[in-house]
Image (cartoon, rainbow, N blue to C red; front, side, top):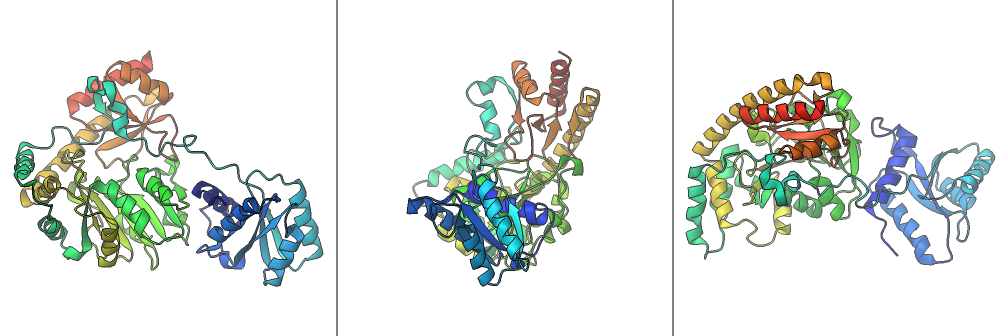
Length: 483
């Protein structure tokens, strides 16, 4: 028997949401709904067992009254018998959900005939979802900005990677290089951990140092016992990829360009027990208000807020780092973007002591190197905090300059999502895929947007650089669009 893949389960769940609740935007009472999952039926028990396993996974933690199974032919029970069982168990509202690829002719007629004979039970039909997207056919969740500048990328002006240019600064490099003398000793993270805790004003038990935020996503996916994780998109794709790799069926809440990619808490399914959202969000550069995010918190739910770029926001306004009054809150921070330490891999998690202990238990021994620990301590020092604050103000000014230049191309169909608050901007350009290729031809690399769920090929992400570089880029873009 093959375990049903997460993409298949997610497609079935989404089909139910579409039929019963009008999609993720409209909550509905699952407790009053029984689902009858219908497959074709086979003489091979292993084939039938996959449908039974899917029914079990759909039911556990879903909130539905139950999920039963039936088959069109070749195996028992058939659809009428399956509906009889649902009614015997007390069901008064049943949704007959077809397995992907199952045509509706026979099962729909069977369900309709049974419903006519049992008016006391409401029977609704949910046609089979389309086959789940195969790996490689949908958005490439493993594509990141560094892919745009590999191989011959050194010849291009890099606007695809969000690491601040001119980093790490000399003083930070010297501290990291000085740590090399102690490489014979095993790393001891206690001092760096205490420094991060002091920086955010939290007990040390609420801090976990990680090899970048990417490791934290993997730890969360493998350590937290959740049944219905949801990722708010468009956003950094690694959280969903990590959850899927750990065997979770991941739901998506897609924010719309027409709404400015703003988050409405009502869009998140009430039964989601893990919600991941970026702030400011990569790639939209939207900064969600803290009070909007905290409205997502509730007992029994983990609220994971990716603040990898929050230190690039002046004053770190809307940050939830350091908050201990929000139930289930998990904040992820990165020190690789502002400080130019992507190759060193250093970040951290801020969460309850229980969550930190669970994540730490999934880490290997000595997960963060001694140079990375030295860098962490330096970045959250008084000098580091002051320099980061100054850099955030500088980046904000450079970003507004870039946005102003891009707005001059509105007549050519160029638009900027916003208001942008991060060290990058999301730009919609007609014919974006061809424009990206032509920009490479004139020396500029930008991040493609179509690998982010919810975005298409007309979107690109552009890193904020100094004003001279931005002026050269926009002039090149204007030339490409005119040509």
